[in-house]
Every structure is written in structure tokens, then in C-alpha cells.
Length: 72
Image 1 (cartoon, helix red, strand yellow):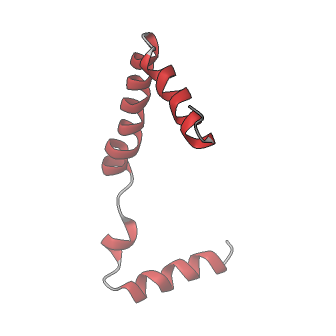
Image 2 (tube, rainbow, N blue to C red):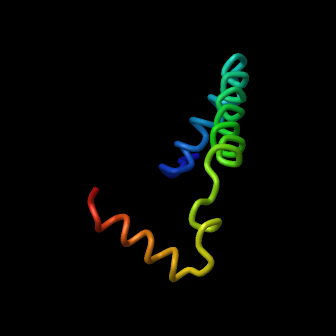
């Protein structure tokens, strides 16, 4: 049976991931670290500055334009 190019690529990776043993643990660690970096750290260390300091979208956009166009 002749498969098209995309299905051959898919099954190449599918068979490779299916036969992994230590790789699954490493992928789990990678996904846990990504979750911590993007979800947990964003909540605690990167508050939404524009939403908390400006009421309307127009005020926010004016502030951003001002910060981008006025060099310090």
C-alpha cells in the first residue's frame, strides 16, 4: 500500500513515540516545565499592567503608542 507523504511522516513519528521508554518521561518533564513557565510564572510575576492601570482600550493604545514612539 502506497501512502502519501504526510501520512508517512505521521506514522514515522507515531511509531517512534510508541516505542519510546525513557523518552516519554523526558517529554512529560518538558511539558511540566513549559506549563510552570507559561502558566504559573505568568500569574505571579507578570501581571496585566495595561488592564490594571488603564480603564479603556483607547487609553491603553495611547500609552503603548507613546512608549513605542518616544525613545528614552
